[in-house]
Image 1 (cartoon, one colour):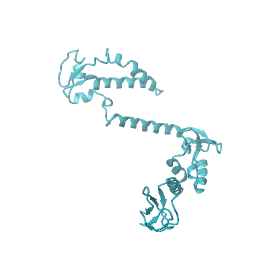
Image 2 (image 1 turned 30 degrees about the horizontal axis):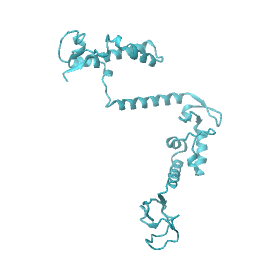
Image 3 (image 1 turned 180 degrees about the horizontal axis):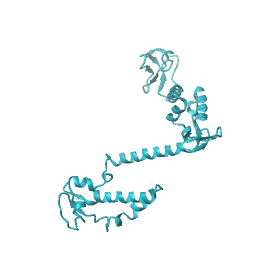
Image 4 (image 1 turned 90 degrees about the vertical axis):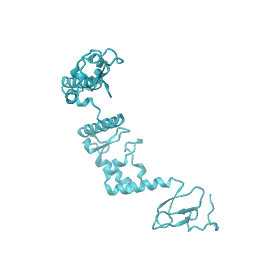
Length: 259
């Protein structure tokens, strides 16, 4: 590229400096809204741009002082190491794409929210004790908060009883469900393995095209072919009739007829 917008780097560096100044003016206070206000309403005036459609263009490597191209040759037309010194590094995009940048922002925001949550105290509606957020679980869908000790006891009983579909928020009539990550953190690896296995089994039980291998020592889930009556276990290779669960008998008479 032989030409580039002066605005792209030198002017962005100027904006970075102005945002830094606002940060210092607010002395550690909430500066985000001031930044937004400045960027939305004062940016063009600050950069002395009369119209967003009249951004000046200058050619890198030239030393022209023509005001129509750039205000100062030192800022817009510097080359090599001089450019690196003038331009703020924050004015140069260092991410692969905008979507990647958004993902980074969201991850950072999530981490900061977690940090803020962990540092505050909350009342558990089960034991009615105040606990730090780092000792509590937060259901994001309903915003209910319970201490980890109470939730661990509650979920442990549910999992041992096989009620893995009911690991929801303890609040009466609340439909929020704990995520697998939350369950694992609360009950530990061993009990979570049982929860994971039972949850998979309950999901498979609801699938009409899945049967379990009839062999008591196997019990591997078998996906059935549409319209067929033969199932083949991928684990033990047992071929069985999907109706009577006995060894596959092809066209021979089956004691059980399709319903």
